[in-house]
Length: 298
Image (cartoon, rainbow, N blue to C red; front, side):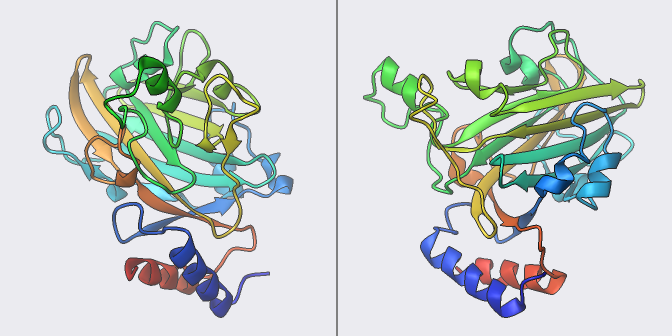
């Protein structure tokens, strides 16, 4: 049963006042829709298709037109659907405590020379960057916030309070989603993360990326038992960022699209945008629009 407007309004005000809803940039909030346990079976992360996402989640959450094409990066190419076009579905599941993402990307020139072995190299090719700040605290999450930290302290705090992932299509080692911190040997594996990517065609090439990851409020790279995953629940506000690079030749950006339009989001989580977790009961368009106006007033 859908929440009434008053219930959503009350919940929004509580979150806004108590949950630090102003920790990230922009006046718009993006909805993440719950994928209920009964519906998870309807999504196959390895079928290389977005059709099941459309059946379960509905219309895409984001389109290429929602992104900012940075004119200062590489060729500075602006949005042109004949050059690069894409759509993205966002979802989450409470039981598994996972955030889900599917991207269907159509690229006139697809660059993928990845040799395997280091997911941190995905960014050099046509891929996607996904960053998540589950507890919505912002801050320097990769760049050693304190210049006096030792090397071990830097390692401990890298990707600790927010996390950055890369995902790419076909790979020789079968790893399509990669977290960039020191905990990669366990964070990138089930039950914390899983995914797949497949590319078909050439000129244009269509790539479908499908994955889930676990956001962490406190990720201790060498201690899964001491790490604290973000508790996902309806109404929760979290920070996230998506970047989409476009390479027409290796080594030189043709275009670089970001959802937030901010620089250095790989380092500063307060430059992410806001996402609101919508329960399986949903909410009307009027309710969601009202939440956006409330959030913008904080």
